[in-house]
Length: 558
Image (cartoon, rainbow, N blue to C red; front, side, top):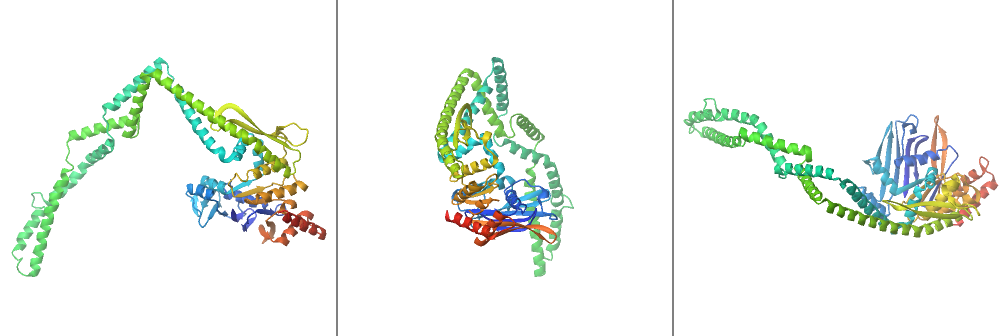
């Protein structure tokens, strides 16, 4: 769940922290206090769009940081697959905001925006008014049905994607393989030429690397041999100036006094050692020089061979392995073209088999969806009745389009009648904004056990509702809060009264600036805030009493 929110230098927020609790967390406050800014900051931390004008006036940078506790083993495994490991069961998502850019981190390590969003999707789900619009697009209805169908449908969908991609691959292959006689003749001729050209070169794996090393050694050997020759001239060649000759003269000159005393003997011994070392050096230098001996003919042969290989690389692949693999593919293609009718018959048979398998799996998929469509619609209706939708009828109509895709052949659409006697019509044609919010809440309640996300945020869930309906929404949010953490901004006392944890967001003038602060309310403070929402600027004893009763009633229904 979301443990902590830390915001700094964002819009009206100077710096604030919120420690959320389990269950239903409610945030209230007067209009303009900064509730939307707070939820917007959460969205930024999860990878939402950022612009520099979101920063607090005068600030050069801002920070949004979310800390989560991760206890669900499935979520831990998914995070681990992304190389994200919770530290002491904690994950911290942060985003530092600067002029024109931002930096995202997970547990202090810089990550891409895509990684941040993927990790966030496992931990939290923000539901605002714009999300209600997903219900207006019938393409989303099938995804909701599949989510409800759960574990039974998932392996079938995976299989559907596999067989469909196999079918499409074979279909493309058959289309590409269809040739008239002239095209077949031209392709066969070209393939035979290419195979002959490659085979005549008698390539071997790794040959190009060896030749390049040899060629480099040959081209650089002139410089090396010149250096060796110069060195050898000074150390060993028959010349009065070479080091070996000079050292021999020195030995002869010093030999006469080598027995004079111990110091002379030691110096003479060192002179002999130097002569021995120089002789060893000259022998090794001579052997090293032989490694760079080559003929002009050998150089030309190496250059020609490299040119041939590079020519083949330019046509058939970047490496010798690629060229040889290309040659094998062309040999196979020659076999196909030489027995073209048999090849096409086999390919058509494979395509027919893949099509039959695709139809079979899509039919299985359709059957599972049809089975769950009625169950899902009944469950949604039950939840809608608890949200004050009376005498509502709802159907999920599943249509086999006959057009196959990786998701099968089905389309689904919600049909609804909100009042008795009305015909069922597409949901997008009849629902208002407030009704959509409650319908989405009903769907979220039904899907609560199917969705793994441990934290749900509802922003503007109370739009267009009041009275008994607001009571019902509050009860429903509290019900969802029993299985996962719920965070909700509201303007309605009926919803606020259902809070397990209640926060007040206030805007205050300080030091010639306006700042937003957040306070966690105790039981008495929560009642006073409910009274403020009920009575506005004038909170009388009777209003305060009503607020207390509202809170006690909400607590008693748990």
